[in-house]
Length: 268
Image (cartoon, rainbow, N blue to C red; front, side):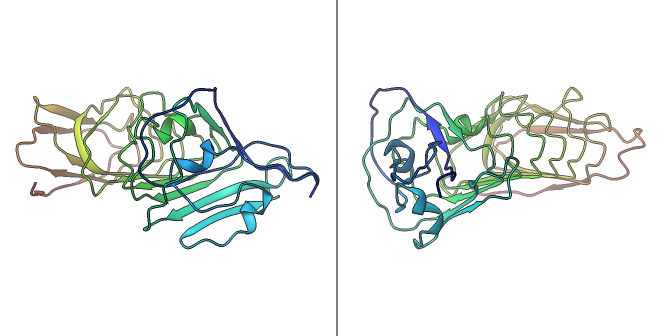
């Protein structure tokens, strides 16, 4: 497997803080017959029990699968899918807080159900900003994740979901996921404390948008237009007590044939 390749993270050399839970990922190292290993920082954040070398793609660990393939844009053997549902905590130490990016140019799917994280200051979305090959993103129970204004322009992304049983609140910045032209569904199953949706956004393929609203500080406006959401069919807002969210539906825009708005009460 002299031409095989796994993926990497960019880091600088500093140490980090706390410890608590699971392990992730691998490194953009060209693997040769002299078997190289992967740095610990990339594996520690989610505490996954995975090997550090090219056997990562063949390893069998409960609830953890790294799928690799050479059916990629350059024919190289690369990670194309990460799936992890980890119930048992494995403390692998603290990863470096200076991790800056993941170099996984063929990664299509990432689905992680965390049981806490080792370093809450590391936002995995920050590390994934440059992975424009992604088609599906699903994170559960990762309290470190916060939406980013520059997490956008994913040309292949069709599905995005954040689900947090810990009910960690977050702000949805204005440019989040914007210009992801194939994106069909957004699900934010965590308390959203601030959100603005207006006609400057561009979601030409989006047909379903769900979020849990905890917008208690003033009214938060959602303005649906056919310019921004020509295919939208369903907007579901699930408010917590005291939430104040105003929704404007432009019924005179012919491209929006019907947007189904469902509002349900969520108890604290």
